[in-house]
Each structure stands twice: as structure tokens, then as C-alpha cells.
Image 1: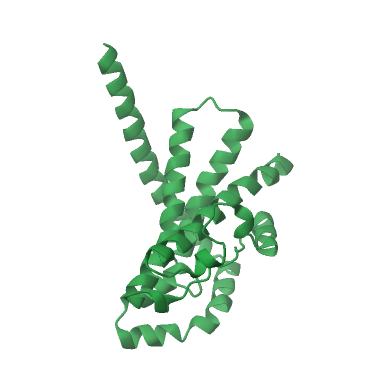
Image 2: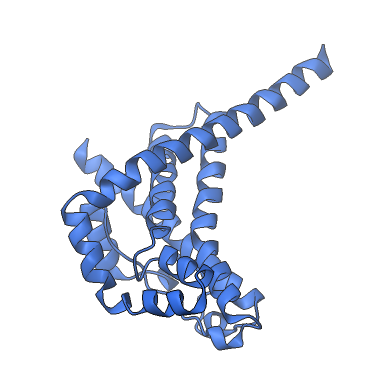
Length: 213
């Protein structure tokens, strides 16, 4: 079962990483920054966003990275707002993907074993990737969102932590702090999405039965 789980992780991880990075590039492009488009990153082809070492580490240890989408905030009309929107786009895309995956699982519960395993893992990975990236620790998306929201002096002071961010993040992961933060937040978000999909599925079923009765 462990070997099977390792195989099922690959497509689930690729889906989560791809939609996350694509969303960053797409939002930047819509805000006037063509850098990601010129770099060939406005695609849902996983190979364009793949960092082989980052995927291997993520596959083995559930912690890794993708190839960052190049962004040039000087193209944005409002630089701070643009950075916040671009940073939010990745986690938002993961949450939307998780919602769609869960909807598929509920609408077609009789899917094959392999498809069910991949979709279940894709649901979990998308949620964890979204919540993990919203943590306000550089270089995660949450740090850029917080920096864009804080007043100028505080934002500048906070930006000085960026060079130490990866070390702080690794230490917090090693000490188990990140896991203790992620688990309840992911559980809460999972419950919300399950409630929404249940409401939607049963609403559609009710309308279908009411129409034919």
C-alpha cells in the first residue's frame, strides 16, 4: 500500500503545484506583467512548473517546492495591491481545485480505485498547499500578502526578515510547529468545502427528483 501511495502522489502533487504556479502567472499577466507569459509559464503543462529536486523532496517528505513563476511588480499599476493579488491567486486556485475534486468524488463515488486514490490525495494536497503558502513566513505567499497589507514602515521592517525566512521556516517545520498550525486549519477548510459540496450535490439531487416527480 505504501508503494501504491507513492505512485498515486505523483499526479496529485503535479496537479496541485501546476494550478498554484499557473494562477500566480495568470493573475500577474492580467495585471499587466507579461514576464510569466514570455517565460512560457502560462500553461497547465506540469513540466513548465516542475523543479525535479523540489518534487522529489515533496514526494518523499511532503515538503518541497516548485519552480517559482517570474513576476515583475513594476508592471503593476499599484505595486502593493498587485503583489497581494498575485500572491493570493495561487492558494485561491488550490482551494478552488480542491472544491472541484471533492465535487467529482461526491458526484461519481463509483470511480475506480486508482482514480479515487489520486483524487483523494489531490484534494488533500491542494488544501495543504493553499494553507501552507498562506503562512506569513518568507518566502511563502502569506508573507507577501502581509507585507502588502501592512503600513509602509512596518512593511519595510517586515521585509528585512526575508533573507532569514527559509531558515525560520525549516526550523519551524523541524520542530513540528508548522504541522500543528496546518492540521486544524486544513481540517476547518476541508469541513467548509465538504459542507458546500454536500449542499450543492443534494440541492441538485432534490431539483432533479422534484422535476421528475
